[in-house]
Amino acid sequence: MPAKIWQLLALKRLYLKQMCGERFTQLQGSALQGKNSVFKAMGGVNHNDLDSMIASCSLCSRSKLTPKRISGFVNPQSLVCFITQNPLAESKHNKPEFVANKSATMLQNMIANVFKLSFESCSILSLVKCPIESTPHIDEISACIGFLHTQLEQIMPKIIVLFGHECAQYILGQSLEGVKDFRDYGRILWHNNRSFLLTHSLGEIMRNPSLKPQVMQHLLVAKGVL
Image 1: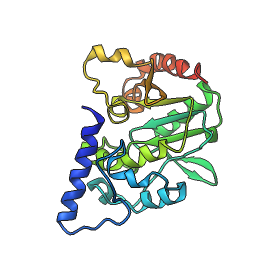
Image 2 (image 1 turned 90 degrees about the vertical axis):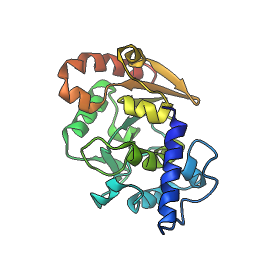
Image 3 (image 1 turned 30 degrees about the horizontal axis):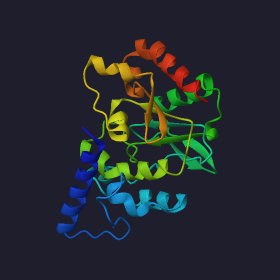
Image 4 (image 1 turned 135 degrees about the horizontal axis):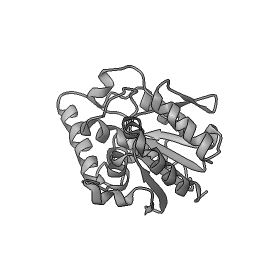
C-alpha cells in the first residue's frame, strides 16, 4: 500500500481526536501537502525540540502502554542509517545508548563486526518510538511515521538499511508480499535521491537463524556503498 495512504490515515486519526475534544498546538499546518503529511509544519524543527515532541507524544494507543519514548540516535554526519520497526537506541551524551534486548545486541554486532564502524558514526532510527516488543499496529505506525521522516531530513547517509518489509512499506511505499517480492532484498534501491537496502527484520532473523548467511550478504552489499 503506498505510503500516501498511511499518511492520510494518520491525518484522519488526528481529525477524529480533534472532534472528540483534543487540541493540537505543535502539529498543525498544511497537513495534506508534502511527504510528511501532518508533520509538515515540523520542517525546520531542531533536534532537541523534536526529541521533546516525541517524549510527550500521545497520538496512538501504543503510547498509553508505556510512559517511555525512545527517539533514536541521529548523527547528521552518519555514513549509514539503520531503521528498525521498534526503537533500539537513544542519544546519551552524543552517543547511542542501546536498549537491553536481543534485537539491540544483534544490531550492535552487525555494526561492529560487519560494517566495522563505531556506533556513534551511525544513525539508528525506528518506525515507532514506544519501546514495546510487539508488532505495531498500522494506526500506531501511521501516527508516528512523521517523526521518522523529520529525522531523515536531518541526515544524508550514504546508505539506509531497512530491516523488514514493514520498513519498506512505510519508507519506500512498497508492498512486499509473496516470495517473488523477495527479489528486492539485498539490492540497492533508489528512492527520493537516497540509497536504501532492504533485508530481513531482526525478529525474523531470531526466529529463523538460517537467514543469517543471507542477511550477511545483504549487509556486505550495503557496506560496499560506503
